[in-house]
Image (tube, rainbow, N blue to C red; front, side):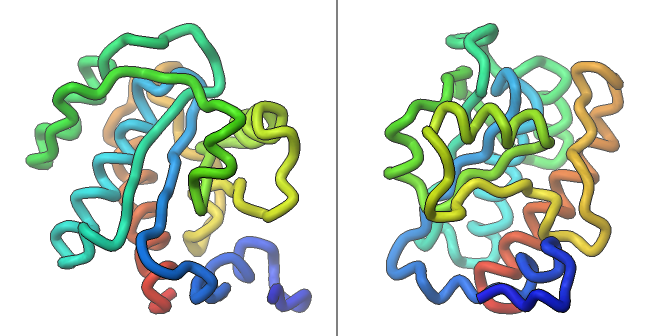
Length: 174
């Protein structure tokens, strides 16, 4: 239950995820599924595995657009992951589908435009499963888009912070 004396982001951070039983399925979503969302997917998988929680979570990623379907992770994003010892080998872009809303427990967008498009694809958000990743951090914001900025370090920092905060919230530590 949301505490209305808090900001929306603060309420998300303090919200209990006890409603999830068994494996929790998370879909990270951005515009093209070649930079931010696959980076988030593999950062989250790595964090969960290092915490001994790899079997508790399923993470995947998708796009809101069709522009990059079938393309691999953008080379600078792939290199940034590899700098941190994380492989995204074999990942190709796919578009979010209506059925993803039923199949995933959380669908996390990178910015406001993603959230709007995700709700359109899903046909709404009656269960409140569509959220912005960076609403779990103390200073909520959009994830910097390296496609436009070229700053993959800043995107790494945003995604790393967001995924750590998400994992803490899911584990009841946030």
